[in-house]
Structures are given as C-alpha cells and as structure tokens.
Image (cartoon, rainbow, N blue to C red; front, side, top):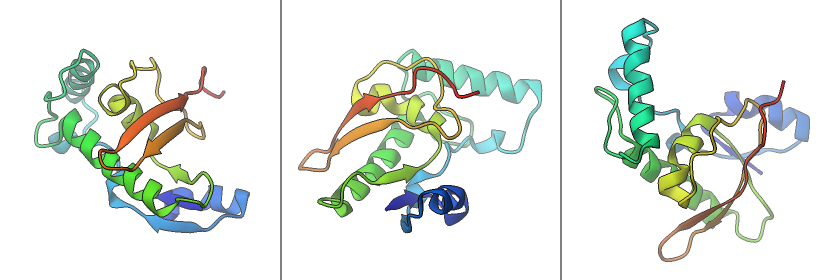
Length: 149
C-alpha cells in the first residue's frame, strides 16, 4: 500500500507498481517556507540557504520567515511516519511517497543520523524503520549513495 500527501503525487508510482493509495496524509507536505513561498529572487534564496545551513548546524529553532522551523517539521513528519507504522502493522513494508528534502532536513533530529549530504533524488528510495510504540522511534536503514541521473 502507498501512503502519500496526494494521489496526484503518487499516481505514477501507483500505476507502475499496481498498488493502491491507502491514505493521504497532510503531514507529508513540503516544508512550510512561509513568506518565501513563490519567490525565486536572490534574497529569498539567501534566506532559504541560511535556514537550511542553521538546521544542518544543529539549530532546530531556525525558522523560515512566516513558516516553520526544523523541530516543527520533524514533529509533523514523525506524526505521519508513526501513523503509517501503526496502520501498516502486519501488512509488510508500506511505501510512503513524500518530499525527500524534508526527510533529509529532519534525519538528525528524527533518527539521530547525520545529514546524508544530499537530498533524496526524485524517484529515490530511503528505507526507515519506525517503531510506533510508546515513544515513537525512527531508524535510518538506507539512504541512496548517489542521485539518479
């Protein structure tokens, strides 16, 4: 089964693998960049880069103006991963279609893993082990070594 932000995002994968979408989860949406949304000017990119650099340096409270910080993003993704893990118990490994940059940004706070140094490429696959018990735990099993070309 596939879990995703939207059927539109997962449709090519559903068709290719012949799997249904089990659930759409709003918590899988892209990072909320707030006031930077829709902007592509140099100042917006400087702010975007600075916030991500602060996150990578361990500052989970660095925030996009009018948007979210890494700790909020991490809590949101943990809710989604935990919900899927609870629903999919005994159903085999669920497939989650989401934004790879989000996952990369929260790996240090979510799984205690260092930043992998590159975003999850489009169509790339990372493997996580999520224990939804009392205090949910996430472990990184695999991250692609290189981006697909």
